[in-house]
Image (cartoon, rainbow, N blue to C red):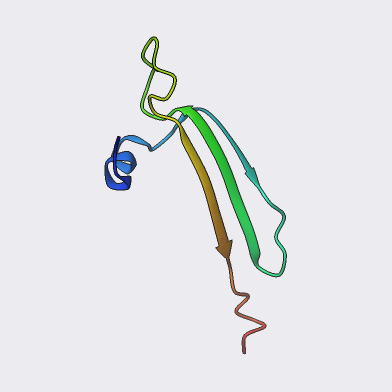
Length: 67
């Protein structure tokens, strides 16, 4: 098991990743992603080596409307 800091060192790009970015609704959107092999090849017989799920909500404020 690893903490987030150690995963960031290895995870500049994930192999076999899939991601979905939701439509933007008034500045709010989300990124949903999954990879089955975050840190290289899976070891034989180990089904949970380095899987990663991401649910990342985002909000971008429109600067023009805030004035």
